[in-house]
Image (cartoon, rainbow, N blue to C red):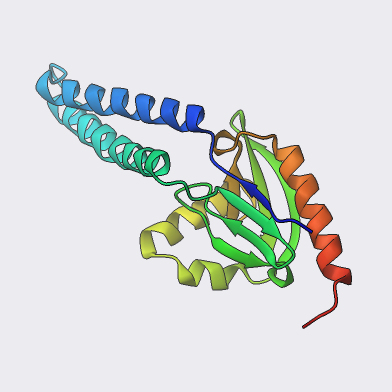
Length: 173
């Protein structure tokens, strides 16, 4: 079977970068024009916007420059590089289920793992904290966002199921 390689949507990543730049600019504006009577809140909001959306913008810029696939699906498993919280390679033996989840008008492909603590242990402390937060919100440690992909999550899920079934019957080497 030929592996399925899905690259990020350049249009969506470009829009994400543009949005991040606007929010960083808004944060700078808040720092330069503090809210009267509540300067601390303006300062806090400004810096929070600059830091968070600065990281988002750097991620988006990196995705535009890099031609690394967002997802690769083959007989060995899934390689997830679709988001800032991507898991990398996940063998079929670690995957118990995959399903589409909705959270706050966003769609994600949630991947259930046999050993999620192993994947959390591999992550940096900051990434681990965010992955745990995602898990408590949507029930999955690994979440592939729809916005990162140029194809539907239903199509990705169909590829996953097809390769999982083929890997289950493929001879072991």
